[in-house]
Length: 369
Image (tube, rainbow, N blue to C red; front, side, top):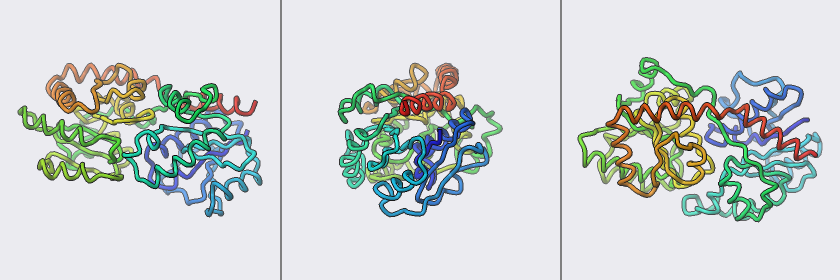
């Protein structure tokens, strides 16, 4: 086989879908050395998107025709090069192509929670995603929950949808306190800290975490620092206004986008990692944190509960007092932290990109039958 994959998520600094695209492509090429894989993009690849650990049968292709890429440029490229199939790793496939296609749908947030996204992205999703879902030969989701949503809301036969869970990257492993000290010192991070990882946007529900932090500071002697690791996204006014109005500036540390080495150090060193998202298709940060030995608090929304199982302390994403109480329990009780640290390490060990790649290869073979 010769497989084309959407390389556009690797044209900028990697976030969730960029990591998915790269880790999947690399794992596919490693476990299937007899076939060829191409990451195809009309844009230049980000210099940090492809490292040295790239198998020889994984190529990156920077196509020249950028204008009307999905409608003209990519279909022409596929017609000329004739790959076995094309995998759209980021919700998009070429509609006017005879090439068999696999479409990854990570979640339906743009359709089901439009208030948490920019209007232009919502309009694009409403007009294009139903078309993409109907046109794709096969669809991949990361959880059974998203599979059911896609089937129900996009009117897709569930037999067309296959679940392939994500996995933490292999770089995420435990570190000793000494090994993390340099990162903490450089970033101005205290010894006791709560970690939040993700793009700052409404869906990630940072505002509830901030309100819970305020509750902890008001009602106890605890003075944890909240470290927010991630780039600033959209619709962040409420979050920033709350920090200012509650005078939380001294207790909140925004690191911005950080390297994997720094992120690993923060996962390994944090007192607790909190992921209070209102909606997810899977939610990789909690699993990454678990792989580094961090105890995790996560929201009990269906997809996250499916991904983390019983290895995290689950709370309602809209219940400030419940989250505050969970934080107090984790911050005060070393036994609770130790329990969820051990449970998380065990749980995360069952998720690997090699397994995800094997399941994805099965989907490719089903597509080409």
